[in-house]
Length: 399
Image 1 (cartoon, rainbow, N blue to C red):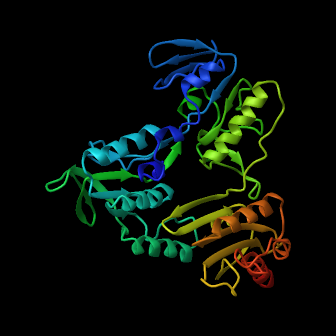
Image 2: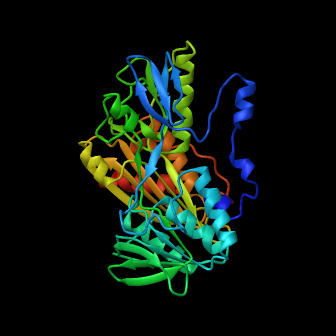
């Protein structure tokens, strides 16, 4: 959606996988702008926001997430947005056209904050990111987060640290004024990008157990504690193949896979969702940022004894002109040598390395295995000793 707002994706229809009309052609009744207010599991009925009651034999909860808000006065003012749904993106893009927006404030420095800072700057809008911490995207190693910060500053995104938003008021020279513990700043729009939480309210009303993450607990077939009720997507948990724990990772590719699994099983098949390794990435201006598996904090929580190494190198062969700086971090278990996680940042090659290491994590490879992977080699795309080999062999020597 940030790429639609930033006018990289020109047509809104390209973001719609299938319209309600197309669904109806295949016998699926899709009702948009319709909320389920209550589920009567004893009667097998759901009550919709328009008062309609619909019977069911099987029920799938795909309620997604709800955006977190700081809970400050004025957060519901016109010109204050969250970006969670397609309609949010439509509203933001329309606002940018209607008010001739010249200045924007983003509260939050996660994925959405980073992608939206690029989208807004590419539209020529002066952009500030306000963050309660000191560095963006705190899942990544401090050194990589600093690289992201450098990229923001290189593209004239103002990054304000250790800031607490206290109110959004009517502006004097611009439409809005953000009041913080560090003073005030005016802007034409404010984007709240402070996070999301699983929308598990219907499950809670039905006394369906939630996991420790606050998301709906499911089995490998996507069933909840009630065999006639399934849950899929951002509202439910997934099994993490590295930590051995159930986690909530709200990403579209995971939701798609879980939906497929539930559909096959409801249709009479027998399929399980084998889990995730936590692969994720984003792009901010000219920088690829990617990670998979566990970071050090998660490895300790999962009972491992982590060791790590971070190396900087070249995404292409050193003999080629035009150095492509690439950073790679690997984490392994001291006791077993098992590969536990990876992170990468670079102008190019970061996502491809992390995808390779995601496959290694999926297969349960050790750091020794990673150090000798048979990887395709050509000077324009990497050296004969890839940065994966170099990092893995360096980390092996530390164990």
